[in-house]
Length: 372
Image (tube, rainbow, N blue to C red; front, side, top):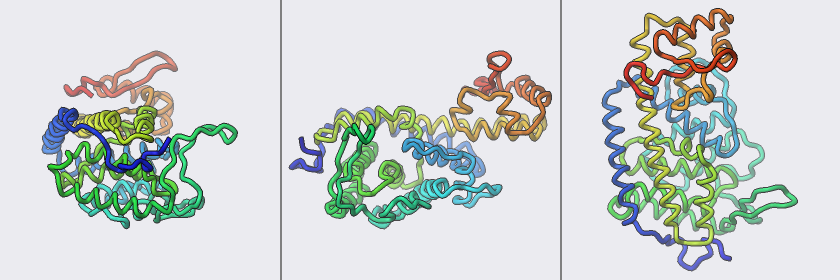
């Protein structure tokens, strides 16, 4: 069976945009909701929002590839790249690299897509790597670029990308197609343009490593470029919640130009990412309300812990905040931890579940009249 790039009509994908009209309408409605919320936050909150969204994406896009980063180090790197004040926190090359990539996508949303942009992104991602031969350039190995799973004795081949000698011409054609559609908004709606561009990039798989992360960055770049302003969405964070569905949707296109099922999946994913972004905006607004309302009633330890909770994003601490978490963050003795947590419950900021060692604390959904 031939791979998709070997088919006679490649890269002319087959799909019916009429069936996807409802999703594009919802996408536009969500944009309106985002803009409405953003009108209610000042510049300092917008900085918090940028940091939160970019950190979530940096952490999640790496996690999808099996790389677990230190979240606090990512936050520090994001802030440094945004030019914000930050306490010194040493970052690994991978943390610094992916943070630089996220901020570059955000700041340079209107940069025209070209070979150099892709090469710049790849250099950022491969920061500090010594196991990669081709950094900041397309792959040039003679052997096939294959996506496999399983062990060496029983590998399973999922996909084989175009050979290296075809990558340059494939990417030249792809870049020309993207730039043509960036300026022609009537030809292909934004939601599906970003979805198709992501898929075609993954089919070409032009780099030795980092194709998934750059492909997701590309979707973010296209959406913001089309809109004319940076509009970062939680694509990687949403995708990371169910990676198997994502991989399955792409695998279904490996041998067929009909990408209708993939478009259904990925456009829905982009809508869920928008919804998650809206929740993040609401969380940043909620954070501001909490610290303003209880400013004089919180001690430094409580403020430090609440900031950590909010820094975790919409999911908060997985499994809830425990007394040991609180102690680890603040260094406070057990009796002080108990008093601090009880005070936060009394103020209505946190609520408690469980007993003894199973006790956990969560942001109060009804605090200040807001539902998280």
